[in-house]
Length: 155
Image (cartoon, rainbow, N blue to C red; front, side):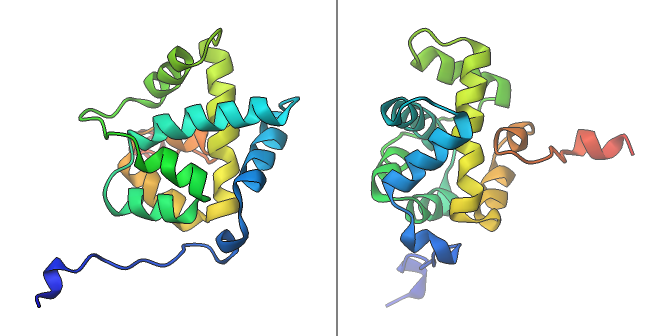
């Protein structure tokens, strides 16, 4: 049997992830976004992760799904990847369009609340790999400084 046909085996990128449950993820988002209720935080999390699932592909998509609790993994994995990745601003607007009554400002808060809750739960290494796939500007949504080529060229 050729090893080329064997899927790559990856390990969990962060040792704590084995202990992360859907409830813990929702609680992290609830606290991050200061949502009043768990159902509100859960709806925001579902919407943002479903949108993210359309933009992450390849090994990073697989590893992200493996790093997240089962419910979150299904949200990522069940999405059909887009052929054209949106800019960070367009991504926020797409989340706004999926959320009744949302504006760009509230959607940015929602996106940042969910994506900003991920690094402590799944590890910075995987987040860095995901960000490497996405257009410039997404780092801010994950709670990181945006060190895109444009930012570096100013120094």
